[in-house]
Length: 513
Image 1 (cartoon, rainbow, N blue to C red):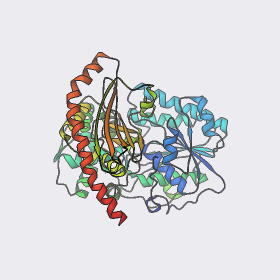
Image 2: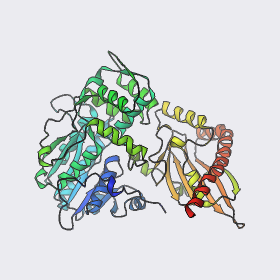
Image 3: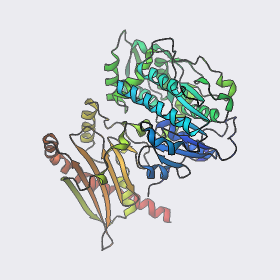
């Protein structure tokens, strides 16, 4: 059974919020809950006593386990006919549906179409209001495609009769946010940082906890209905200043060199090789750096008064939560787009023709073996032959794939949908099974399964099985070319899992004592 990872009460953002929860049996819908902001908002709303309904496109059981206090419905904003059930009896809806890959026209059109469908369905369901989080930018200037698309979505939502509250934010700083991880990894890994001229554009970053506070505060303040507000933190900084301050916080001596010019696409590509964030997301975010994003209408500070964090405080808190292994949501939760709709292993109908399995019999307990292989990837690495995993990830990133630098949300826990380098958890059963789906670029589809099977003599059989599904000549050649490497990697990995499970056994005995 998959476990939830609900934050501790002391980790919630809104206990000191000056507003009060709405009275009565108020049902709140959260769309985009699988994303970085939506996932944290669900926790806050549940903790404040709301009846929360979460709208997802797939895998309702996973999200029900993730948020046991919420109601989960399957619907897709691109499919109008599915929205009625999601919006039935809803008082207010948070619209957090958008994509970080808006460079292509298809994403502009899809997001506008989704917003139009949602607006129509909200009207028919007679909901009281919609709260939308968009991007901050001066509409009188030429905006990046990313920011312009956010504004278009807001305008589409406002065409209906349901009052829409629009919050506009610049970059969001918090553990797990894409902007935070880009800056952190650039500062952490590069001793001499080339700074293009557009990095001197001013910005007003905001901490994730302050974003959540404003979202909840708007819900609980009826006077914000039908209005638009800019939200930001205490500081107005250039992107260069943000990197410089990050270096100070991390005690890194870094040299910043100004460049008179820089190709945005090339810079995004190079940054993607250094950071966990793929080039398409970096390009979308960096494209907005040419626009000054500073709060113009900050009247919300008087309507929902609380002290926002400084940029440095936001960075320090993010680093602290990472150190404590308490990153509850991450940008990778919703990337690649439509990953939740990918073909699942159990949907193949039959086992793939290309299969390779490796196993050993061991006296180690199932719980120790499970704990051991659930630590693979991320900072821990893959126990042996890490250079081969790194090389495969780097090749994938060079080809504009997800790469292996995505790491993990948590070093200590896994749930379905979690990312492990260039894999994603498709299934997990405590002390039995871990199934990973490949998200690297492949001429086919791949899975990696870790399985524990009890034996009649009281021992356990630990197995690792690679599944590969393809119907192409290129896919077949790929499998047979890399099969010898699989033998080396997986035979070594399974031995390391068994060996390292010794530590888990010792920990269990100490806990029993």
